Image 1 (cartoon, rainbow, N blue to C red):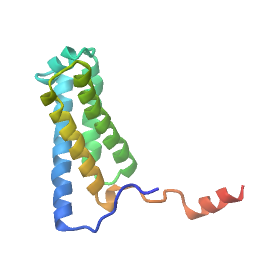
Image 2 (cartoon, helix red, strand yellow):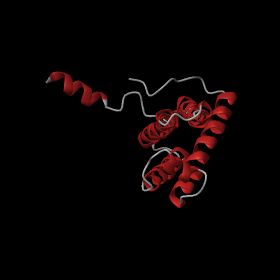
Image 3 (cartoon, rainbow, N blue to C red):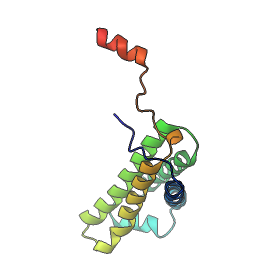
Length: 146
């Protein structure tokens, strides 16, 4: 199973990767800090949507950690989890707006950040990806003999 599409590295691709990744990391770090500090506009929105106040601490911590992991070199397996968490967070925000009957305009920011996270994930360079086959050939051969 592949870790995502592999395209020839081009300057355009690298620039697009770094721009989308910078936006995603900034959103994670700033949004996470706002959640941890319970600042406007995010904390009041969280409680207006019916979520408990302590969720801000959980989400804020997870967002900051995800932002740091996505920005850090290497760590391909942690990056997969960080990107997954970012998508779950953003899709959860959109679902919360849907569940409360909020206006369509409120869906745009979380779905836009989810799209940027997907673009960043798809364009990441080989050094930031899991190998196509994380199990060594010797382990594969021995598992087929059982």
